[in-house]
Length: 611
Image (cartoon, rainbow, N blue to C red; front, side, top):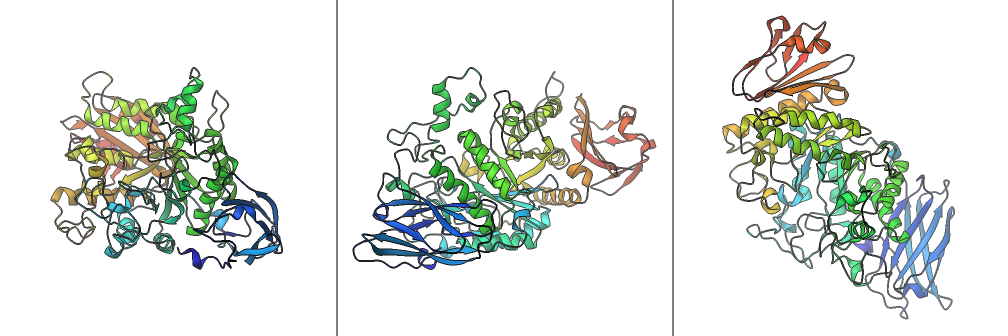
């Protein structure tokens, strides 16, 4: 997005300018929060006196900081204010030296009531650089380092927004209704920036992915197909090459600003009643890695900046969800205020936080509604269920003949749902962009893969699937992120195998894709699986049985890890089967009488609609 297209500015010769910025670049009337804070960055702008004249807009405060090249302007926008443009005039010694034309836009109809993702959705995760390259012209961009190199480790491969747009039909046909894309904002870092988590401009899409307008187009095209767009935001840190790192406004804009320290990653220190103040401070304020400065969210100017940046993207790109990176690394009190502000503007919105812990009590601490012993109140509606992901992998890999091993791990983990305020709101997954591929984790055992996918698409929560899982993508050589985030088959012109067209897929890959599609499309039709209650029976001897049900529907899932077929003793399940007479196999469509019993083949899972 070119700045000259956003502002009209008139420059007096006495005030030379460089890299002028007004952020956010524009705003909207009709927001519930009437206050807006503008960051102005321009050479010696701090020496000027700003003035605003527009009906319904009042300049209530001007904040000058240590750097003379910043001003922070607090505006109050009345509820009756009309959309339109108005000048912000900057004077020095009584003379106008610069004028910006600032725009207030109308919001889209019903913007505040947008519906976020829920457990009725299924979410597809994409690493954009590795999904599909539809526009080779933006593979390298003048002035941007970290050039295209598809053979180098941790290098850019050229995937872009247009590549995602062109495959939205594919994502829809699989059965997904939400799309989480790893960060698309600018990462103009020297190396290893393809992942998107070291942002250098929080208001700009990386030109190697596309433009802000292309991102808006992606959102619109996704919505046409019933797909909700979920943005990946990083409030904890930025990239070391972020534009403000060359001219920091205050001495506390980032934590450990003069003497950077790296966090010890001991996230448990937040909940630990015995934690030292040293550990708590180093965790909250330490830099994630040397190339990612830790943002000081206790600075009120920074806090406002991050909150407004989030709202700007939601409103600008018409988003329906947020994935929050490294959630517990941020200042916890700020994150509570941040969440409250978002949900105040968008009461039906959805957000999911990343707390990579296999301890349910640690994850539960961050979910909205949890009664924490230290009094902390979180407003985060959802968290990723890393405990269940870990339990699933262990359950599939372990020998059920050994005490406390195998499928009982799933049962034990779900039995701890009492720790969560809303377990059905958790996001569940077999893997993601930071861990080995699910098919690799289970040693490329296709029968176990089908069991795992069957479980994830029928248990409680919102399932999230990483791109390529549907065609059994693996990382056999290493667990490096570069290999895990491999190119999607068919996403590049020189690929000989394509997940999209099914050209060159092995029979097992084709079966996997068909299996997942069948399950996802069926899931869309079954409210019991989407939002119903869960009741399970103790996992024993390689057998695990559970039900999803509501007043109108009932689904029975049977997981048999034994090598031999197993005939169920249906008497154990009478509290759910009482009054029912038939079981319809979801995958095959075959219906059988319960009176004839149910037999499950070895190393398999069956999903039945019970009537």
